[in-house]
Structure formats: structure tokens, C-alpha cells
Image (cartoon, rainbow, N blue to C red):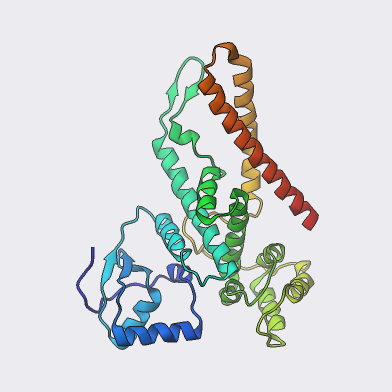
Length: 323
């Protein structure tokens, strides 16, 4: 639904604004010129009067007193709004690879929250003499967010384990942003080339240490800081004990505190239940009376699982070789 064409007073949320694709100075100038000449053609999207899409257009319109339309969006939660914004921004073609990884990682984190809540809401437990049965919707989800990762991987044409990597990347950037927000635009713009391993090391440092690293990276006033230089500067501080600082509030609501091992640990804890389920089927099923359709369905699922396990083992092996 569109509201009337006028100069609306809206709220700019810093977190939502951070998810908006940054523009170069030239791109922003061109957008400003277009709005001044033609008006604001696209409506500003809002949720409870908070801008979710069109942050730059809104600023320009307010600056020059240009009326605009607003389109209302309805989201069930903050996580749903974050997922929508990330998905929307990922359709743009001027994203840096760093910003793209960041958006995909945050979209996964947000949609995992939504999927897990939906799974809890949908679950119906039926106690019988022998076991507990639950709805199919619960079987399709797990605390590891595997189904969520598969869906987002397909949307973005990457593998599901890449989604897990991007999740770690996004949460690492968020952790750095709580300590030194000014460095985040340099990372996401690609101006600072920093490997994921070095980024994690950086996230564990104190704000004072990060500021010192920024000073060193800016010393030569280079257009781009290459991996070699960033690795050298971060490594020089990584073994030093961080200065204790008070914890800041998480910038993405509902997001758990950063732990680079969280997904792996959760998956490791889940696997024994898979093994138990397989053992139960093997020991209690009379395969001679099982229909061919059921056998075929299980065969396909097991082959898919086998491929997924092979991909994950390969990723783990690559990670060990990097260390």
C-alpha cells in the first residue's frame, strides 16, 4: 500500500542502514542529480515507520524537501526484516565480494532464527508406548540451520558449506563493528583485504589494538591494503593479550554472541542422533516387506547425505591445510 506523495518523517535505523549497499561518491552524486531532476520515482519502503529500503533516497529527499511515496512492509519479527533487507540488497550488481559475503551471512543468521522458531511453533509431540513422533516440519529443520543453509545456497548459487563460512564472516565483522565501527566500511568496501582467519584474529583484539592496526594500515595512504600487509600488521598484535573492555549490545538483534566454533560444535552434537536413527532403522526394519518406492526415496536421501558429508570433509581438510 502506498501513502500519499509528501515529505514523510521516517526513522533511520543504523543497523538497517548498514545493510544498505554503499555507493561511491560518483554514484551518490548521480542519484542525487536524478532525484532533483525527476523526483523520487521509487517509493521508500518502511516497517513501522522505519526505513527498510531507500535510505539514500530518503536522505536526499529530506535534504532538498522533495516529496516521495512510502510503501508499507509487514514483518513478524526483526529477524524477518533483516532477512528481507539482505535478500533485497543481494539483487544489486555493484556489491563488493566482501559486502556480498556479509549480506549472505547475515541473511542466513536471520532466516535460521525464523526457521527454528517456526519449527518450535509447528512441532506436535505425540507420545506412544515406544517412541515420540513429531511433525514433518520439525524433521526438516535442525539447530545447525542445515535446511536454511541449503535454501540460501541455492538462491545465491554457492554450496551450503560456503553459507556456513559466510555466516562466520558476517558474525566476525559484527564483532569487530562493536569494538571499532569505523573500520567496518573499509573491510566491506574491499579497501582492506583481510583473510577470514586474520579477520577472526582481529575480532578478538581490543578497540585500542584495532585502532593501532588501522593507523599502521593507513600509514602509506594506499588505495587498497593488500592481504600481505594486513596479515603482517594483524599478526604483530594477535599474540598480545587484549585490553579488557565492557561488552557492547549486539547490533543484530536476536543474534547469539560470536563463537567461530558454534556451527561446527552444534553439528558434532547432532550427528550421534542421526547415527542412532539409522541404527534403529537397520535393527527394527524388515526390508523384505518395504515397498520399492520407500527404498528408492531413502536411497536418494542417503546419496545426497553422502555427498554433503564428502563436501564437508573436503572443506575441513582445506581448513586444516590453511592452518
